[in-house]
Amino acid sequence: MAQTITDYSAFLTDAREAVEELAGLERREAELEAQEKRLERTLEAEKKAVADAIHSTIRRRNEEICSSYDKEIAKGQERLKKIRSKREKAKSQGVKDRIAEETSEIRSHNRELRIKMRTLFQQKHVPFFCNSGCYYALFSPRGVREFFALFCAMLVCFLAVLRDLLADSGEDDRLSVCDLFLCHRGVRGLYIAVSNWTKGRYGDTLREGRAIRNQIQTNNQMMRVITRNIKKDKDEAIYDLQKFDDEIAQLEQDLEQTAKKKKEALNTFDNVTRTIIADEIANNSQPRIDGLTEELKETARQRRYVETIVKEKKIFITDNYGIYTGREFLTAERLDALKALIDSGEAKNISEAIDIYKNTKK
Image 1 (tube, rainbow, N blue to C red):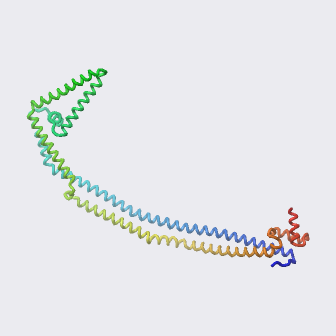
Image 2: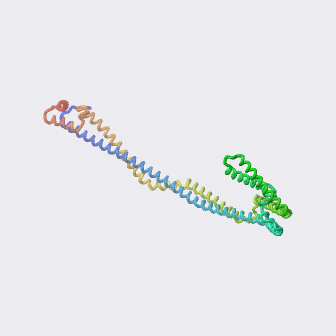
């Protein structure tokens, strides 16, 4: 409730003190508000640092567990790969030995046949080129391979003659055809002459050689059949691979156990160790976090208290001084100016001092 002013100078002095006190409270309120925001940021940063430390530590420990087990698994897989390679080599050698053993008689028979044929041709004074696969393919073929070889030889010879004739023919196409015909007749005549001479003179020996070669080819076919059957045989007992199989089984079991232990270790880490690590890191930082939390609570309490005092002080100044001076004069500088006008006698009251102040500022 407004009261009659008897001492304007003292009134203005009290008003100035109240305004200065309010300004001090507002500065304190601003300081506390800034401190509260700073503490909030510091507390959040500390909590984030703890969370990051927990996350990075858990990830690192998880990676260390995986790395440790993965190294052991990699070593086991490498050993398993090596022993499997040794087993394959041993089986391959066993297959080779088995083929050699089961075809030894046939190969021995083939050697005897070749010696017999060479001796026969030497005794009968048959030219050396007659004792060759090329001769029999050209002059006494038997079977698909030799007939195919004969066809290829004739085709190559024909193409070679044709190429030479075309290169030398120039523009006379009729001469080229004639030369080709003559060359063909010449090659054919040479072929017939060699065939008639060798077969006519050494016919019996060549026929006997043909029979020997047929027997060798039959033996070779038998060896191919034996080799194919051995390679297809699924029974590996005869190759003495049990020691490799036992070691492979042991390594596979060890790998399975290691993988199982890794899974168990990761499950234990996720369900138990992770919580222990998080609690340890959090407990190490908890005193600082608790201290910051308490400091933040105290700062917030003080700010709220000062905020209440500021609000009450503003109401008090408005009710007791603002109604006489107006809001615009509730500053230390202007209140001093009004007090000076009254103390000097230039104004008798506050309203007159305000009018003089305003007139001087125009």
